[in-house]
Image (cartoon, rainbow, N blue to C red):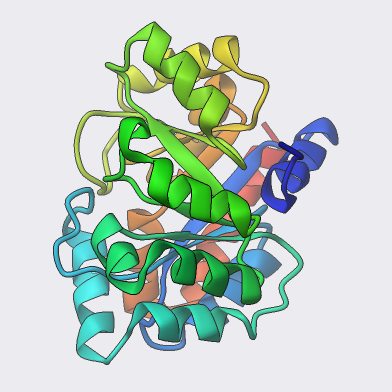
Length: 258
């Protein structure tokens, strides 16, 4: 399979010597597109757009609160995807949601909508490798890169299979638990990053619980970069796009000067 837009972009940034930074922004929450523009302007290499779901098994308190507010304001998957089509930010966009809303909309319809809106990839954390066929086939047919997750307790053989099937990048879960800010980087993060780098040449990013500039830098020592969600959304809910820009600027500066 040819390399897609997301993976090509992240590989190019890595080959240029950059450590990768992918912020998570909850779609449908206030002026969320302004937040996306703000984090890209501050140095994001790609942006993960959360499509809210009422039963988010992977999300902690902050992302749940952001999602609940977005849903209360009338956010829908198709609405967020349509709004994302108006974003011309110069970096790939990836949606993150759960299998239920995707299946409700229909795999092929959802993949087609992402493609038509210029969204490069999708993350469905509750859809395991063994059950990927329906969505995976639809995504591949519409040039949507399906990013798969690997956990610290993933056996070696399965890790190899996840890395081979993942598109765009491989999402290394830095701890066994839900999203949320942490006081320090999880002990499992180092091992997760090292295992990914030993298994695949695809961009490998660590996420879950990565909360500040120091932790982003530490995570990037073991992997190609980091995903930051809860810490960013806490600032967005308090201070909007300006707070997002300030925070991501801080993270980018720390990565570029390490």
